[in-house]
Image 1 (tube, rainbow, N blue to C red):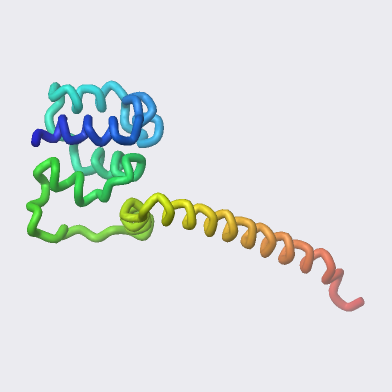
Image 2: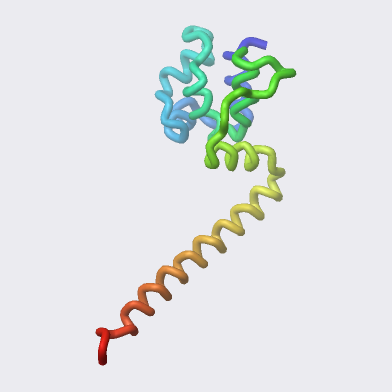
Length: 130
C-alpha cells in the first residue's frame, strides 16, 4: 500500500480533518493534504514522529509504512521517555486508555497537594531563632 493511502486511512479512522491533525501534530495541514494526495512524496522521519502521537500509532509503524524500516528489523534509534510513553499508550485498549487518564488525573491532584503542603510548611516554619 502506498504511504499516502495508508496515512489517509489512519486520519479517516481517527475522524480528523487535515487541519485538526495539523493542529495536534504541529505539521502544516496543507502539507498533510499533499502527503495524502500523493503530491508530496514520503515525509521525513521527523514529520512521522510528529504525526504518530495524535494518530495513536507507534512511530515504528509509520516508519515501516513509509519504507524507512523493514518489517523484520528492529529500529536502530533510541527512544526518549516521552516517545516510549506514546508508543505504550498507543497499544492500550480504549478501556486501558480511560484507566490511564484516571490515573493521570489522580497523579496531577497528588502533585498539587504536595506542592501546597511544601509551600505551607515553608510559611509555618517562621524566622529562625525564635
